[in-house]
Length: 107
Length: 121
Image (cartoon, rainbow over all chains, first blue to last red; front, side, top):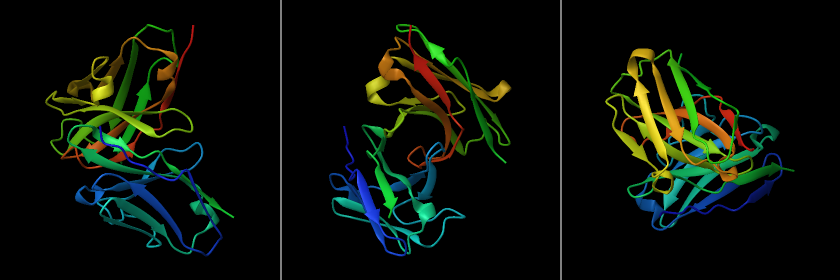
């Protein structure tokens, strides 16, 4: 089965840039989607197809994907960005796969 | 505006079968543009995709749960359902219904609010 690996936590000061990695075997050949989940809330799609932002998602959030790592980048981090972030791919044998999640803490 | 609402028991005994229903409103469950999915999440853990169904009845299940899962659809009632057999404590989770746009490789872009299911005697 296909596996996605994320760091458990990332901490950043307000106004700085946060980068959240998602590792997988040749993940660059797959489309990666990112979800944001705040405490007690439903996951929200924030990046699709590596770098597309759904309507309403601020431009401060962006994504990239190459080789064995996909990255979600959040610039000018705000307190409201504090959340768990999950990457997700479709794999032909495993179907929908989620990464283990990264807790973003705004210091 | 799409609305998806899960319903079912909040408490299930070990070894019993979980039955949940998702009622869809604001969009057609019979649309060829969507798949309808079940996803669960243990608090503090990653979401786990259970499976999905197309309006025609075609189903797709995650390999690890395939032997225990059945997803069905009732287009006349705009509902789809999940049955998960042989429940154990490890199945305690918040269960979400969700929508994928076609093809199924698209991400689940809309989720219901979720319903907590606890497995306990």
